[in-house]
Image (cartoon, rainbow, N blue to C red; front, side, top):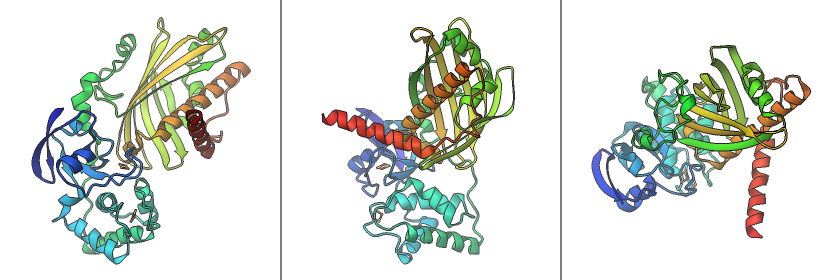
Length: 389
Ligand code: FES
Ligand code: FES
């Protein structure tokens, strides 16, 4: 058990929690704040949404111990909040709830929308609500209620709250656990920019994944082509360069849309290569123009012989997502998506190496997002079937 102290609804509280206890359990079981609801417990439905340091966050996927020193606001903590009072009245007037199970999370998200996006229209409100699921209402009443508050506040001349209030959600967790973060390969780290401007800059990631695939070409050939950034970019689904690479610095854009996840990241990266070790590291930072999310990432790759005239590529991704996209960080679909993108990258790389010609530019090649989703679902069913047998 670990002792933690934090502020909840403006009150300092202390308690003990197991390292694996998530914040929602701590709020409900230790502090009796049962207004925070739990349903999926994997960051998908939004029922458990609270504010952590002013930013909406899933309390089911934030460890209580990681909230040491944080300011947490649950639905019970908005008793004197004017915007929440407007929302409560509008939810009532527009019949925006039936059973009310999703309502605490909906209200916390709705308040964030109202304060952050004063000019949002109904379509934008629906997009912003994509992370909160309701089984009863069909959403029409909820959207109407939020739009009603937006209109009322516009009529009152109310201002948006200043930006920069978001995240990264769990930043305190990052600070606490940064010492535990896995170190990237030493030889490569030495070549990475020392400014901390790109990559994680010592922060702990909130998304980590590793994957491996094999390309049926000799190692030397694969290593050489990975040094040709424009050609590599053409193999990456959704990626385009926005400026010619220079001195290992790359500027580009990555646009991917799969189901509820749509991104259009523009960013910069630095690539360092460790020639003898046949590995490299990409340190990057970018911003998603669609959701306003930001991301920092360190991606390491290592090449090894993968059989006769074949090369195994191991990739480790450590990323720190902030903003709305961070809510999807742990969902299986993100992991599945990355695996599918890697498979598509390997396919294009192989085709390019075998044909001696460039793979079709990513912007022209259809990513077929629903094929990716369907493949992820099919894999899920296959694994369930294997378990059942
Ligand atoms: S219970 Fe936390 S997102 Fe569903
Ligand atoms: S009102 Fe019942 S789940 Fe939303």
